[in-house]
Image 1 (cartoon, rainbow, N blue to C red):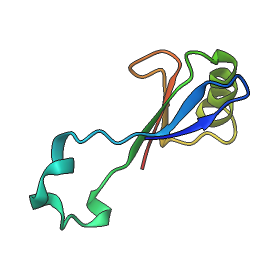
Image 2 (cartoon, helix red, strand yellow; image 1 turned 180 degrees about the vertical axis):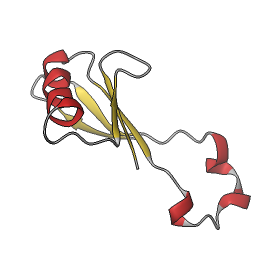
Image 3 (spheres, rainbow, N blue to C red; image 1 turned 45 degrees about the vertical axis):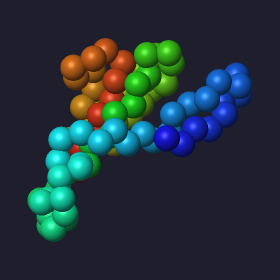
Image 4 (cartoon, rainbow, N blue to C red; image 1 turned 90 degrees about the vertical axis):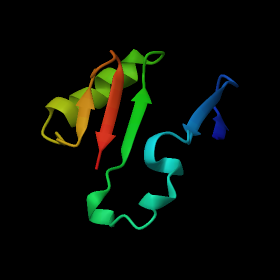
Length: 82
């Protein structure tokens, strides 16, 4: 898991890999890229101001991107699927 320092000195998780599902199954190593989906979720629960701005830009505004879902299933979470 990679971490970076925020201005407050707390570490923020940049990425984390948890071996679940098909991740550890060698029978899936020949999957075609067009049949794969990447899912990234950002937890904004400690920075709801950032969540609101991000949701306004990518969830509702002229830059709306249908790959993003907001507050689904948890409040103040944004999920990107591609």
